Length: 153
Image (cartoon, rainbow, N blue to C red; front, side, top):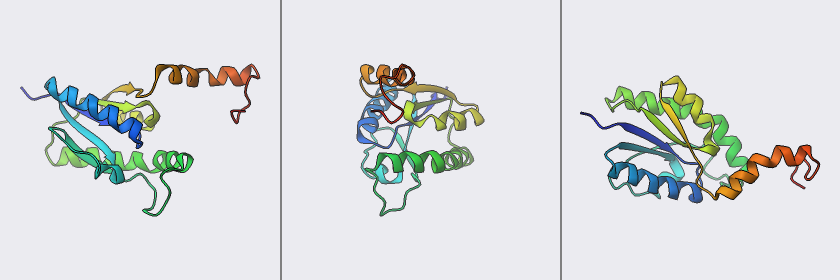
């Protein structure tokens, strides 16, 4: 029987790539086939170890500052969905097993819509502290209550 194929897509920042790579290794150890999808820039920094590696452009030019989180998020939100669709189609055309799951970084929510188009189930992954996630979920309420403004002040 073929292994279940799982796609893993982190936000392109080390604090997100590292935990999702660790999760990928655990999935391989449990018998899953894993394809770890990274940006072209981060792709060269990751070592496989039984994991298929794939990369897609993040939408920024080579000389643009990837440490500018606003610029990075804007670029990958606009450009990466199309690149992910192309990658999935190319993988299928090359005879790779059809992915059944996408483990997507919660910050890469756009990927969930792409996965739906391909009939891929989605699991959302939060790699940072739970307290940080809980705080982020409460931001609209904090703004509504006037504790902070819409700029975070």
